[in-house]
Length: 171
Image (cartoon, rainbow, N blue to C red; front, side):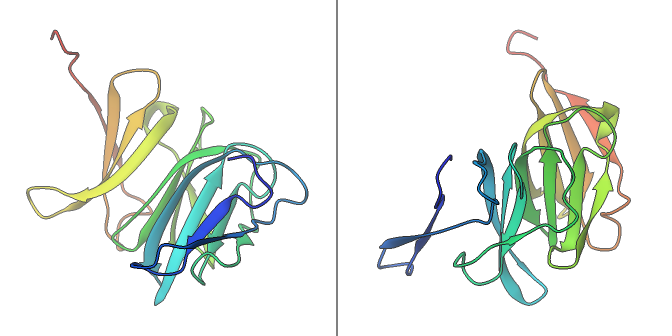
């Protein structure tokens, strides 16, 4: 999305009228890649990530009516974000260490983490597996590789990310 007012906010679940709101970008045009919702620190939170411009990670705690830029933002672009089990995760579009961010309180700060083999992951989601364990799952952009992580608030900052190869259609 490359607009001055890139966010549309609905007025309610049954009356779907939308209004627009601005994200602070210091006059730059951002290419917004992902937006997600989560309930964190007793607040309804939205997180949006961009792969260029300034203010590449922003959050809102008032229904999307105003947005706050992540204060310790690095120069990486981000292409995917997700919420699960009280944790927000954002994947960078950069290869190398610290290519993901994890936060249990996006208003307070983020923790840098590295994915396995420093791969670029384009998509991430959260779900509960058959053993009732919450997991984030990321999909690699250039191959048939996924990563999974156990996600709970006591171990998620230091959780290992396990890498798997997904069989191709003819395998």
